[in-house]
Length: 222
Image 1 (spheres, rainbow, N blue to C red):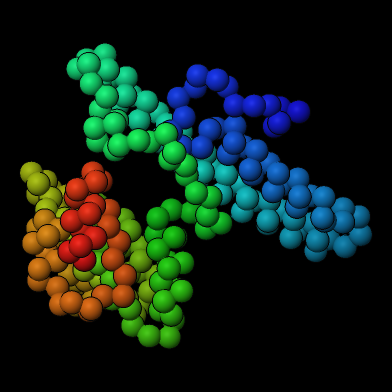
Image 2: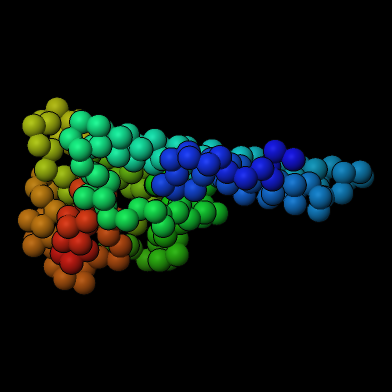
């Protein structure tokens, strides 16, 4: 079967290969179908449809992430070698040969994953304080604040040469700013961290600069 075919040799793969993602989720769907009685009551069929739809959502997330990661790193490697005679991937990220995307059974976007973490922290039973480093358009901030009335949120982004986006975020999140559940620091990560009291946060979401040194600095600061 095509699912069992080996990955193509020579294809640039920095995350899981496209075929390995398909194999993973196809196997799960086959297992679901094989364990569901297809005759009799309608409830098992409805449950199968729901589980299959959820699996499809997970597949789309995993598939798109692998395509993006493989494509962009391949472009970076090709551009570095052809245009500059340098291995930019090695210089920026070190040995990426062992990088693999981990499959998580949490469907949806980043705010869905963060909602899962907030649930684990007990947000339905107590107030939670978190910070997002790298707010940009505040799509994550807005959704988390709307979903969680007991969430207190610090957002950080320097908005370098981007007054328009900064003002748009202030406008869209004005109700949360007014209720004092949201603070927006227009500053760098390290400068903002210096203004936040130690041990005052339950969760920090680091999504600013993604190079090694910056991430290490953010982890140390937050």
